[in-house]
Image (cartoon, rainbow over all chains, first blue to last red; front, side, top):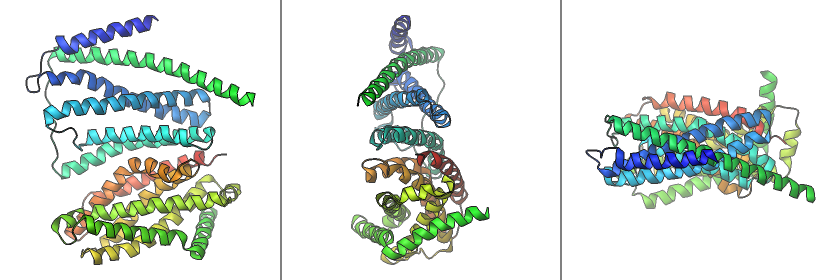
Length: 216
Length: 222
């Protein structure tokens, strides 16, 4: 329970830092504050993808259900965070770039990441037998993780041959960095809680499924 | 090395023999890519500068759509008539089955492309008679079948298999598609094999072949 309290306090703190403490960005105005949510969400989207990758390898090597459960829960939570990254990114892009979407390397790689997560979840639920489904998903998780950096790089090389949109880069004042660090921490703690609950639920689901199989 | 190649060849020979008897996959591949080409001619006015710009993309989209169709068939015929079990019972490595199925899909795709490239050149009045195409087309196709063979072995064991293969394949295939399209575009513009996309395409092929052949073992496990 204590960790939930900590997470709540951190979330309130990060809201305060992002909305009130951090100074308003000079060119973009208040809309830039979405940055303090967008970046932590992106970090967690990639962290989950990495967990899926490692847990999938371990599952294929050792065949233990625990690794598979971890990979599955990380894929589910990762899908949620990637969806939120794409939505917050579009909300930010429209007023700043004047367009909801641009096919630049980072955006495209995020969309491909989202599609691979969807493929991971779909292949599991569409598999003829669940035992196969877990292995198929693990293969997709591994291949997908290898693929996303290459997608990023290939689009980067491609777009540097064709002039593309330029993302403005600039320094951050210390207040902004602090606000970002607090919200990174807040979202990561929130993720840990989410993961713990999801894993517990997943274990219960597995148990119920086994009991139902045994009953037949 | 020798016994491995013999085993791979045995699988390829089996596929070629059954394909020569039915002409099932080749006909559907060829007709499908022809139909895509015809639809493109309505969507994009042939002969204009804009169409010329879009041509490398159109070509590869046609090949990939047709290839998905062919790869789906490649494992569906094995599965539906129970010959996949026979293949799995063979005293060979899973990797051998992967390379065998890959080689026969590659041959089919290349045979189709050998007919579609000239047809495309004729219908869209394009200078596609280039030696460079003889290198780019196989390189792009190898990348496609490397991942495609792995994923079609997965898709065949799922419900809604026709939908499953593109869902798995297209996101992963992005680098190969960009590489193949850009290499073809460079060849069309400059008439010779140049630019950095050909070595990159080769690198993608090697990487995808390595990862897919390693992962294949876990897909066909019973």
